[in-house]
Image 1 (tube, rainbow over the protein chains, first blue to last red):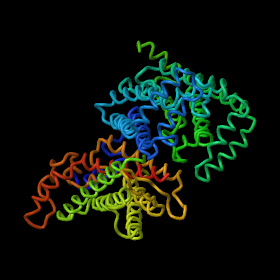
Image 2 (image 1 turned 60 degrees about the vertical axis):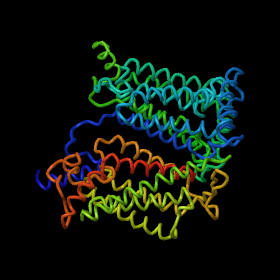
Image 3 (image 1 turned 180 degrees about the vertical axis):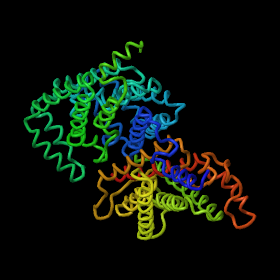
Image 4 (image 1 turned 90 degrees about the vertical axis):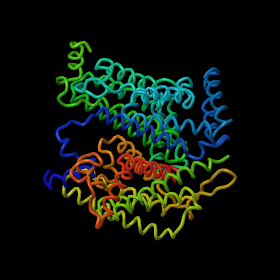
Length: 335
Length: 228
């Protein structure tokens, strides 16, 4: 090996994010990249779980927060949430340490290739548990599961992503989400999710004229100045326009839902629209899940929705010119 | 009941462990007269020691101004290395930039300190004197960068490269410690070079180097979340 080659090789190893001269030409495994992004979100959740208030009892602690979620739900739902809250209240340190450990386990489990499947499986189970006991089923039974506020629950997207990013499948599918479950199943999941978001935008208390204003008006407590300023603008903009905004969001969701059946160029436009809208909601309405105010357990639905949208991004040169054609092609080979 | 004291002692202990490990690597590289990777070793030793003092105040020492100066110098050093890397290899994200961001975060932690006080089996936190505190948006952004760095470091096929892949020349060239054309004694001025190389082969284990970086990243992200 020539001295120059050795130098280049050494630098390439010292700077791993730069494409290595040995690996140039090899496409990045996008499914793996998205798995690692999901692991990063789980790691963030694990670290958030270690915040001091999570270990404390009382109304300002984690158990108090859980008990508070039960209010307004049907009796049988509220009882299960209260039951969980009581366990946490009795043993706050033990339960919270266990909760954080499980999330660390999921994050690191996804990273280690031999345990990726187990970790993703655990993440589905854990996400569903958190959705029910920790998010009160996303407020669905309360009628307040508007996507503006994070409905039907940010953690549900973790579960959906775990399924879509399950290792394996064909690497020549038209988008990453189709690799394991196939194009048709991935499209069905997409339509169901965005259809559900459209419906939730229009039903329940989320569509009332004041709903959006009330949602934002109570958020600026403890937020940094710049975010509190955005909140005040949002609150005044949305004042009395909750219904209009809900209808607009529903229309966007429907357009995005059908977007995956259109030619890739149009699909890309609809995906960009979806990402811009939900990024705006994440910042201006969800306030990053309340993390910046120091009392949050996760980043709410904005971040996972962005990740969910990206796994449907059409990949160049895969399976013909459109995802619809790809579905036919995949069907033809019996996928 | 407040948060458990053991959690902060656990993180403080882990930070000290990283500092001690990187100090050993630093001593070995000095003994072998090989400068490669020393900057990261120095950086992690200082960061680990400083972070331990933040998690467990009783372990803190030295004037904050001196620590700020040290991390300021490291910040400039890693920024320069990042620029050199980009100039040499074109547009990419140099690994030195992560260390630059870590040095920047350390400076912020000294500028906006959080008071950790212990008592009756728990610790409580108080804001910085004068009510000024780190912008929580910046804190979250930095925490996300460190958590992402931890995950992608663990997943990297180039084990050890995230920390200082060039520390062991044999590894740097062949991808595996102890093999390749330079796997014998290297760099030492006397007969002890062979022994140093042997010790180094047992200590500078690529996955352990990665682990030290991951622990440091998670510790810093946790501290930043606490500061929010």
